[in-house]
Structure formats: C-alpha cells, structure tokens
Image (cartoon, rainbow, N blue to C red; front, side):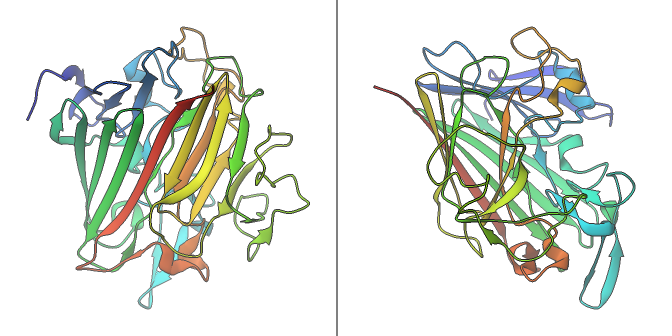
Length: 331
C-alpha cells in the first residue's frame, strides 16, 4: 500500500486512527478522510476552488450535522418510524431524527464512524467498514467498501456491501457541490433526467407513488436554476441500472455530469448549511444554500414501500452502487 499519499491526523472519537488520503493524477485531485469516508475536497486543475464543500479543520467532521461529504448508511435517507419488518421479524431502528425516524443509518451510521484504509495508490483509495448484526437495529453483520478513483477529469465512487443475513443496504455519497466558490448556488443550473419525483409529508416520508415532474417546480428536464426549496428524491428508474446519466450541474463556465447505477437521486438545496458556523475550505463559514447535495441512492423508506427490492441484500449477494462525476469546461 502506498503511504506517501496518507497523512495521520490523530485519533478519532471512537479511538481509531484518523487519516487523510490525497489521490489524483492529472486533471482532478481529491482528499478523503477516514472518518465517515468523507470527501473533503475535489479540485480540478486550473480551477481555484474545490467543487465540493468541505471543512477546513478535519476535526469538524467529528460533529457533522450536514453530513458534508460523508458516505451515509447503512441506509441513506429516511425509514419511517425507524421500523420495518423483514422475513416476518420487526426491527426497531435508532430513531435519530426528531425521535421519530431513522436517518442515514442512525446516530452511529457510516457517516460518523471510522473507516479503514485497505488499499491506496496515487489515483485511488479503498476504505472498509464492518458493522455488527443489530447495529442501529439493522439485521445482519455487514462488510462495506468505498473506493474513490480519479482518471483525468473524472471521479468514480464505488460502494459495495455483503451481509450474512437478509437486510437492507443503501449507501450514498452526501457531497455538496458548488462549482464557483461563491457564497451560494443561486447561479447554478441543474439538469435531471428523472421524469418523476416522490412527494413527501412533513417528515419527508413518501406519500405514495411517484408523480410526474411536468408542470411542477421539480421539472429539471431542461436545466435551470432552483426556484423553490427542494429536498426530494427524483426517480430515474424503478430498479438499479447500468451506469447512466442522472444529473448535470453548470455554473461559471464549468459543467459537472453525474452518472450512476442508482434508481434515485436525492436533491437537497443545502438550506440548513448556515447553521454550523464552521469554516469551510474558503476560510469563511458556509451560508445557507452554499452547496447542492446530489445523492444517488435507492428511493426513501424502501423497507416499508413497494420498492423494497431496490435496497434488499441477501447472503451470498453483493450490493453495488457506482457513481461517476465528470467535469468539462464550457467553450
């Protein structure tokens, strides 16, 4: 394993070694932290600002209410009432959001745990994390892997999981994107391939089946600026697919294309980002709407919904999610 790209930062709150790993050859470079497997920065050659939000002080990731850059799970997004029934057995999960539902795998989900460097090189790093049966209430001991790899102006994020019992798995990158380094993403144009989205209640739990985006504020089939608050899942497919286009983001002469295998993309406008007061990579605290989260994942609350198969993982199977971010400059 290459060591020159790994920096020891001390000890994480769970007593594990805390490290920073830098990868990148040529056009794109990234810095990843072992705590939360978080993407702290992503920089394109010749472009001054990181295109993802990150805290300047790595120890700020130990208390990261916005999940900046983290890999969240074992179930990203929300599970209603923190409960589901699988194989005839009801499982009560950690209800870490308002004491009502399970969010991003619970209070000790993957985004707030120390991952271990399993392999690294100049253009890649693979991190691993094992969770015990019953962790946060989920069934099955599960082994997780997160691989970041750069090639030219592209970053690939590969997530995998294997369990010894039937369970649910739904990891997601919770990176926030800002292509210009400006205070907000007001000038960014978002494009989505999804023709449907999931309406939600006040708890952000799906109300029912997907609805068409046409004629609503959720129509981004033609790229445009955000005009209304959004924290919704956009439904690009009913099941996991081959790697395919899901989103574009454009601002300041830079364009990002997001491809994924995942059936949905949760889009969050970063409205709460101004609450932490912590310094970002620019040296100043982030404001509300400082970045846009685009989270490829299964649809929310799948264990309690007709789309449960999107996230089910059985013994002998490998759950696999791939996302590819590519950057180009406008002519």
